[in-house]
Image (cartoon, rainbow, N blue to C red):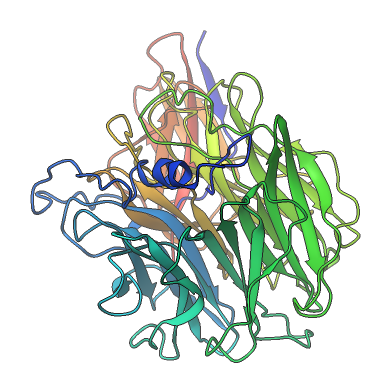
Amino acid sequence: MWFLTACCVFCLVFDCLGADKKFSDWGRMLEEKYSNGITGFPLLEMPDRPPFRIPLDEAGPDRRCNQDLTMRSQNEISLAAWRQNTDIVLVSANDHRTGIQFSAGFYRSLDGGTTWEDALITTGPAGFFDAGGDPSVCIDNSGRMYACYLGVELEHLYNGLYVQTSVDSGTTWSEPVPVVEHLGGYPLPFEDKPMSAVDISYDSPYQGNVYITWTHNGPSGSPIHFSLSSDGGQSFTAPIPISATNSCHMSCPAVGPNGEVYAVWFEQILASQTIRFDRSFDGGTTWGTDIAVASYSDIRNEDNPCGGFRTPSYPVVACDISEGPRRGWIYVCWTNWNGTDADILLCRSEDGGTTWTTPARVNDDATASWQWWPWIAVHPATGELGCSWLDRREDPADCLYRPWGSISSDGGITWIDNMPIASELSDPSDINFLGDYCGLTFKDGGFYAGWTDARNDDGDCYVAWFRDDNIKLVVAQLGSDARLNWTRADADAYFIHYSYSPDGPFHTFAGMTVDTFFIDENAIHDDSKRFYRVSPVMNR
């Protein structure tokens, strides 16, 4: 018996270390970090690559941000859009184009993600550091861009966190401003995984403040440190610890509607794994008592079913600063090992972080495949909550991946059907380092997702945007044909996709159509069930 099924429609556009104890051997801790595909201690030769990509696969609607033509990788994606004009976007990644060491790469789009330019490739103060990485970005309400990153000198492992700013949408950049730096002495602390946020709430007395959290790795452990700038990134306050313990990693900051500053991180003490949360009500000057959000099970120590790259879990925090009914709600999202595979979990607080809901699953697949590396953002105008992640549900072998996403209009209580975001699957089977995280930010009418895409090499920085169009798809049988009709969206054209499973993999019919109907000729030819999806090609 033949079945025609109209699936829910999607719209497509286009460590600190997780150790179970403190590191008394400080050198061993640094060796583990820097022997995992980044740079440094010891130096690693990267696989030989052709000098240029020939041919370069630019098929599909997704956009490649880095503009180099080398076969070197870009990974660990961070995104920020300007609230006043979300067509202006800044994206960052570890950028390996120069060869053996990473730089911090920053890329800009001034037309809503249609075209991209390299804006800044840096390792920090000129002539001093050999490598840079772990970049993150934010944009304040005036349009000032902030590029935050780690700089490393490889011989002695001198290191520091730096911020550069641009007031002309990424055309020119200030000199690096140190947040913290270590240029001598032993044993050297090592600063890791800086994440940044800027206060863009119109009602905040601290509007424009920039906040940075990171892991401070030292002989006594790894607390979470914090610093802020109240003068547009010209200077930063002396770092302070905000975690109650020294067994922490993978922090993330966010800002509330009245200038509240929030931070989350993972705390691991022996076998106990806890997501911790703290808050400041005076612009980051003082902090409260750490609050347990939820327990977690890190996927870092689980066997990666495909590829040699590490897969650390991490928490992400976001807050609703809109004028909507969920103003002030806080959300925390992370990857969790459920005993057989990895899922995306989310919980929320409706009382400023004092209490938290039971974690709920965001991915809606019925497979045993991995979903990992999520990021969340709340649209500052609508209050919609967006989430994107890497997903292997389309590959029964649990190898090929692409980013998927979803949007919630009720604070994460319910979600629209998960939607694939990238136009192509990525094969990571030969990749030894894919980064440690992906990114997401808001756009008018939806969200930008950023990920490491392997269609060309070991990874490029790719961005696409997605939204909830509520397209209604109806499938009818006409003899041996299937006729698809759908409601019109704000789009230039549409892609039609089909699969023999609701979880994919989905295949795309050749070409696009400007119509709101499509006939799949001779579709009915066996006893299988065919599933369809329609995705609008977005107006930019």
